[in-house]
Image (cartoon, protein in one colour):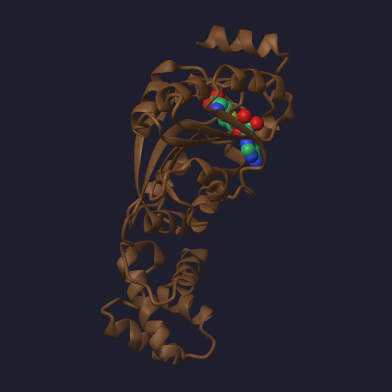
Length: 287
Ligand code: SAM
């Protein structure tokens, strides 16, 4: 595929822009793996962020067929001619010239989604805004069923990491709260043109039908998670008392002991369920 994509770039006078995270996927083995993980059915609605020179897009269009829809979001206007030609060839492809961070994903998919259906999202993400895009999708609570995204390997490892692991952090907790996360495959730099400096991985994030923990105050839960990871060397008790000015340290210590969570533990050892227990207890304590 490398030759084909290089020719396409040349034909349309396109050069990969580093600043827009343009590393094009040219290894069809990994395209197959992405498609398999995406499980797109005929008639499905799929969003693609950053179609670039249409390396993945025609495969998505073929997977959903003419009764489906591919909504592709791109910012690089140098790709206009190439992507307009693609949309003429595949009527089910619709290009939106928008910043992926600003998109209301429900608004762009709703016209094509049957009632009670959700969309899938597939993307080889621009690495300079990987985390903001994923968090925009998750926190926006858009109507997606699953996301299949190519990200830096290191980010993928952080996202799927269990507690106690070096990579475990606020990002792991946030993503695992909303989704079941798994690494589908790792991808070497040589699968892209131009080759990035880092290795990559394809992540599959399956939206959870039911939250893994019950929360009284979701915002407080995330505040605690951020505080606990802000200074990783701090004990949980110190992190909490930096957050809570109206509750004494002694009261916080008693609360933690009552919850059977050792106050000198560090945030990076806490499970989602333990963070949730603390957040819910704190709501009561604040009363
Ligand atoms: N899908 C192609 C592929 O797999 O070869 C290109 C992927 S390339 C890693 C990332 C794509 O995202 C580029 O086409 C880039 O122009 C686009 N992009 C960068 N920033 C964007 C943004 N804020 N919103 C939408 N697309 C963006």
